[in-house]
Length: 87
Image 1 (cartoon, rainbow, N blue to C red):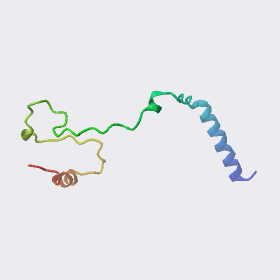
Image 2 (image 1 turned 60 degrees about the vertical axis):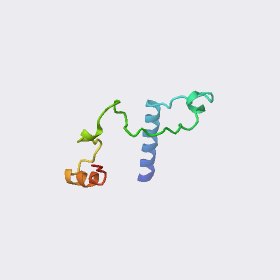
Image 3 (image 1 turned 30 degrees about the horizontal axis):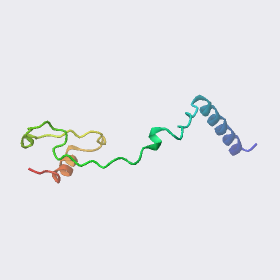
Image 4 (image 1 turned 180 degrees about the horizontal axis):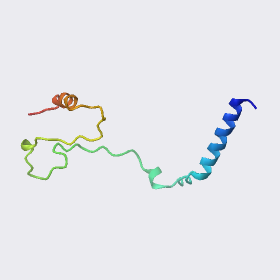
């Protein structure tokens, strides 16, 4: 058996072991509500987001930005968000 054939056979055995360890879930029935749901409905945007009534947005001075790449610098973020500044 050639080395490539041995490697292919070993990969097939590993795949079979993984499939036996993590079996596929059964398929959803055709009448399942998630399958019958149509496309999501369009929602009108709320200009104030989820702020409470009477909240004074002119006093806002910060924003939380998550899931930022580790190499993003403060200067880069300031430059990016400077284009979004409304004040």
